[in-house]
Amino acid sequence: MDEASYPAARTVARRLQDRFASSPAAFKNSATPKPDAGTIEEIITNAFWASLRREEGHVTRLSIAFLPPEQSERPVTLNPHVRLESDLLSRLAPAVEKPGIHVGVWRYGEELCIWGVTRTVPTWCFIVEVVGPGLLVVKFRRDQPTTKFANVAVLEGADVKFIEQQAAMISEAPPVLGSLLAFYSSAGRNESDNILVKVATAMRAHGRGGSLLVVPRNTDGWLDSIVQPITYSLIPPFPDLNTFLQRIEQGLETSPLSLQSAVDGLAGLTAVDGATVITDQFEPLAFGAKIMSRDSVQRVEQVLLTEPIEGVPDTTVDPAHLGGTRHLSAAQFAHDQRDAIALIASQDGQFTVFAWSSTHNIVHAYRLDALLI
Image 1 (cartoon, one colour):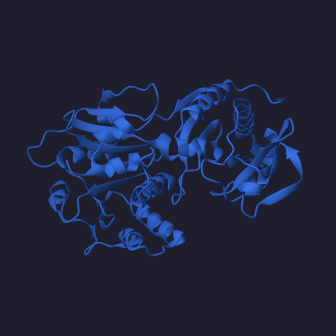
Image 2 (spheres, rainbow, N blue to C red):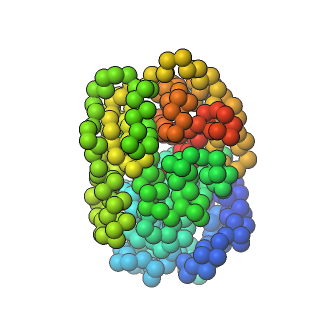
Image 3 (cartoon, rainbow, N blue to C red):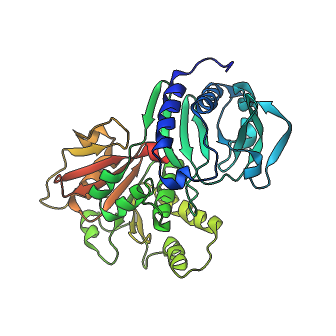
């Protein structure tokens, strides 16, 4: 490589090489090509230096996919192919910064080259996304029908975070939260898992911060933790996302565009001051709701914090350590309503889910932004 060295790229390349060897049979038997350690290091290194460049004052954002053009549907191809270089990536970025568009990279002889642009990538395709200056995410294309890729590692400058396997977290989590975590393990295959991930991603993406409370269907105990009257109450519950799940169960076709519109609509409600409340069947009940502590219930002073990052142990912290009023009220809601969960998106991109842990007898806070980038 002619590009200056980026030590974190070598660290990730070596770890991924080992992970490939121990991956599930579905991954290893896939026809999708797996890059070797040298290829991984070179792609990440060029992506990193490109992330530090600006094109006409704009930050570089793009996604790089490792595959030959033959494995893409109707790709835009360059003639001739051009060598993979960071300055070229930054120049191409304005044309490919929208979600779902990838710069196609493949090895021709001794050189890694950019062969064009693709909107489709096969299952288990290796992806490096440039999210911002010095911030990269290594991911793979998951099985259909989901469109959310599985994050493997997050690189921020010299800091490398590898996503931890989720088995222990899933067994501890309540059913609704468990479905979201299962999406990132081999167990996650249900469309309901995908929808919850979509909602969480959309909440994080709007950048205004938000609170989403998920409560059991056909119960009203959650009202004891909400200031009355509720300014924006939806009665009967609006069934948009639930309708999609019903159509899937009936074997009927659904429109991905309409589904994303419904997800964005729900996420938009969370941007309103206060909390949005939905059932565990994705039916909105209210938004702009104010959380309060139930009478004679103990105030939450500590929560158990878990991050799905290898080598990061669980810690007990004051909920104020995680954020402001939004986080404090969410922790209190999870404490008082132990069959519900609270999802909190911060304006800075952090994403935390609060749920009651019967195992540890404490509110459990899951910091999940590394999964949702």
